[in-house]
Image (cartoon, rainbow, N blue to C red; front, side):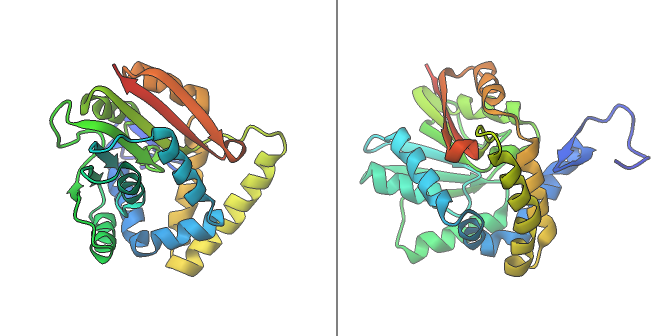
Length: 253
């Protein structure tokens, strides 16, 4: 934090760094601007392709109904959106909202290459979604919630745009629950991921931030309590790969 920061200014974290709340979104946009074109390649390299299994598990648990409407938040490259449409079938529609315009451009290009027309793309903030209340059957966010400045505000707004009876689902990195595995995971994350990021994207700092942001994210029970505070009901979660990631879900009833 800069010594000139006003004493009453609200602070948050950017990885392990403490920053003014109003500065975090700008810095997060900078990270994803830098890596957007190689984001999906990096996901495969970092996880050995396991992120695909996690995303498939998310869609399996969501089990979307035909003809339904999804809002995928922070879904710029389209990974969750495409899986949802393939599962939900004809008549379904996805709106992708992402604060980062570069990520949206990557997703639009992917959709056009695949001939997908049943999507809308919106540059928008998860804390202040530009949609009417009760607009969507499902709201999802995958590996994006930890980058939001005011997570509880975002959860409340995602609930706002759900229809009554609608379902929220979040896939995010979480806390390892197998003793000893956390040390191996930390060693890999802090030593290897920034180096892979540097080789593939030319930006080690972006991936150092992403690793740090994972460690700053709350554990499974704490995040579940935040969903309940936001008004979601029937809140549950499932650990994936010993808690390296977790799926959280809740309903607007």
